[in-house]
Length: 173
Image (cartoon, rainbow, N blue to C red; front, side):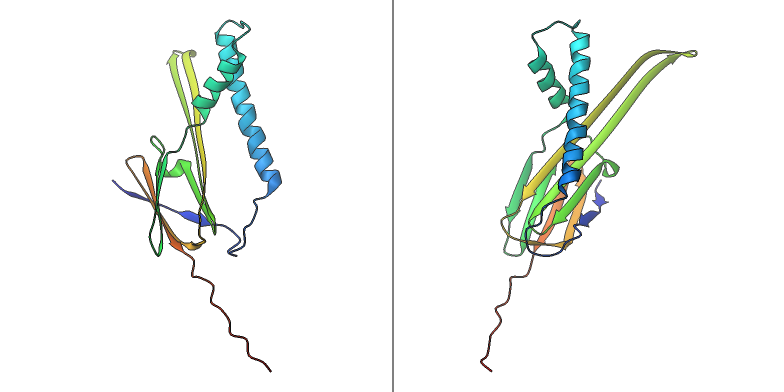
């Protein structure tokens, strides 16, 4: 089963390198850091609050919350083809953004499981998985000419290269 995914071009279609809004990046980083710290503290509490394993708790929390995104990029004369493994994610949980020199893949999935016995909750589990990947491209692409599909946990993107700059002949007046 193959499904289509909308890729959002960046607001700037210029071929110059643009930098994302720094305050937004810092806010996202702070939220991610807080989520990891919260999970690491939960692991610390599960271990009976014993000292000495703080670093292991942090790394385990990172591995639970942030999943690596293995990719395969191939180039042709006219564009790029990108395959990214995103198992367990569906279209609603993925956000892909194309910029002239980069591609961003972000996914976030939250699961909540509860077992109720009458009016009492017997068991409750909450988990969150997030992935982020920025792919820098060696040549500029046309953010308006990007297509994506998701099938069996593999995100496939087709990116068209931007037209090369044409030299302008200057004539003496």
